[in-house]
Image (tube, rainbow, N blue to C red; front, side, top):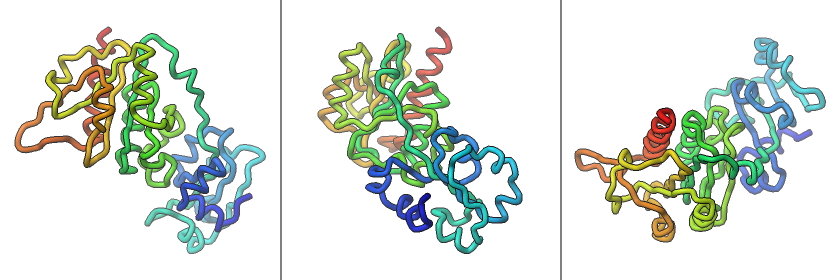
Length: 256
C-alpha cells in the first residue's frame, strides 16, 4: 500500500509513474469508469465514503482502501482546488500494438512533441468519440498520465489505445508500410481537407503548439492539407484542428 507521501510523489513525478507503472486519477467519474483489474488503491474522505455507497460497492476485492481521510489532509493530497474526496491509484494501461494494426480501415492520430496536457487529453477524448483506433505520441510529448491530462481525458485514457514512439518519422514509416495515408494540416497544404478521401487507412499528424510538425515529419506525410480560415488567423489550436479532421473522417465513414 502506498503512503500518502508516495501518492503525492506519484502525482507530481513522471519518473515515479514510469518506474512504478502507476498513476493517480482523481474524482468519482474516473474511479467509476476505471477497469477493475487496473485499480490498486483507493483513498477517500470520510464524507465522500458516507455520501457515495455505490463507490464502496464497486471497489474490487484485494485492492487497498482508505476511507476515513480527514478533509484537510485530503486537500493536501489532491491536485485540484476543489477536490471531490476520492483518489484512485491505478496500473498504467497496457495496450498491444499488434492488435491496433489489424482491421481494414484503421484511423490513427500522431502527436509530435505536443506539450499542453489539456490539448493531449482533449484529443484523446475526442478521438474516442470520433472512432480513432489509436493515438501515438512522440517521446518529447506531454505525459498522458499527468493528473491534468488524466482529468481532461474524462475517462478516455482507459479506452483509447495510446503508445509513445521514438519519433514522428518512425511511426510514419511504420504506417506507410501498412498502406495507411498520413495527412497533416499545414501552411503549405494545397487541398482543403474536405476534398480528401479518409475512408481508407488514415492517420493525421498534429504538431507542437507553437512550431507545428517538424519538417522531417512533413516530408513523410502522404499529403499536406489545409483547413480554411478567415480573418488573420494562421492556425487553429492543436486540439481544435485535430477535432475538425477527426470528425470529417467520421462523417465520411458514416456515409460508407
